[in-house]
Image (cartoon, rainbow, N blue to C red; front, side):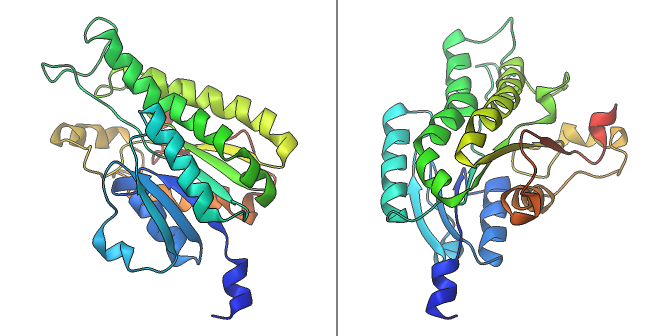
Length: 250
């Protein structure tokens, strides 16, 4: 590839990129010629680190204010003053109470709720603020990963998780309005039942409620994220795309 082509490559920041939807998204952006800067609590998979376009992976705890702030600094250093074309806020957590119950309104410590909101909601807001300038320079896009559980009662998602995702959907709307002045588009992707490590055997019971009669793949979500970051969606902002196989219809 020529130096000019390398110079023209776009760059995306992806959080929670070591596994699941985040890793599938990182892999897809690499396949399509983007430079990527990623973070997760652990290291990126060794096989992915060999790709020269995987510019930098920064182990980060986005639920910790100091770690998040340090990630922004290191990621900007990796950008070297160049534009940022996309930010994918994928990292999230769906914790359980001590007795393996999902965190609900009647159970679990309130501080645990705060931890859920710190990662699932506030991290996305802080990262949007932190990368506002390079995103403006790149006329870029932000994609927040929400959930079907943020819009309706889900049998296996606790209230803390569901409400934090509902808040992230609302944040997407407000960010899209404010960031429009920066020429930055903001959208969300709301997955349904996706085959990841979070899926437990009991989720099989939900398949009859999915019109496409299968769980989704991480690639299904990744391609939708890519669309919202690409030039093909230049006039799309403030939207939330369902990737549920039709489950959200019921």
